[in-house]
Image (cartoon, rainbow, N blue to C red; front, side):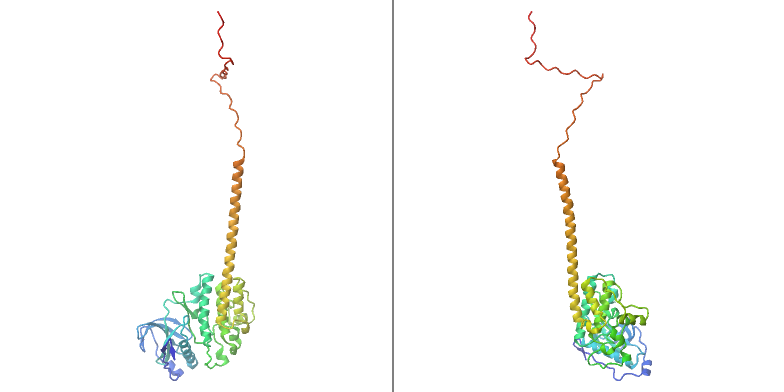
Length: 362
């Protein structure tokens, strides 16, 4: 098996028995095992414990050590995860470096995503455009997975690691299906996370396909658009009822985005997008339509504000012009001033018309 152009050797041999698994040693930070130094525990889940470790070349890696109590079926899934990751060498999918066994416990070595957060923690508080752009990156990565004939089956925020640059890394392919893997029994096929499981995962495992991952993308998109999950319930029975038959209101993000979301969440797999690539194309078109509508709305607002400003300015000019054209009011004549004694000063005498008076002859 090859991963990222390098040969990855599996050393499982025969699967250990339950008794052998229970007798396996306990691994703790600081231990040096098979050339790997375990630095710290960074995660623990249904499949095992994840450590930040240093490999023989000095690189920091993530080492996933399988749980002791999973048994043969869990071992098969653990091995399958490494095999599938080794096929997927592309941006957006967690890269695998090596695999093997420590004692009787299988391990898987992948790239270590420094400062990683899950998708929900990363997107919280971000705007719609950033959220959609991020989901498009996830959909593009998942499209490459589908091109290999692989179905993830457990796509959820905690399985999408986000590095400090905001790039997604799809992880945890332990439940994935591939064309060359034999299907498990119906009981074993009831796997996934109820919050994002498609109806066929609840009822008919034979119908699982790329459209099943499209449903999970629809759940993520619904949350990204309105900050709530579409089928959350207090119990499994309540979640089952909501997924399979309950009503679902659109997220209320506009006609184009609502249409993409609701089609991805169609209960009939045939009515959904066929795969992640088709979902991504539709979401890009809806995003363009949403941005175009937003731009038109902003333009109308600007035009309206400009119109209001012009109207106000014109009214002011008219008022100014009217004031400038009005005749000035006549000034009232001044009353004659009075002397201190209260009498008016003598009126001046006009000189005679023919000059000063002549003296009488003697």
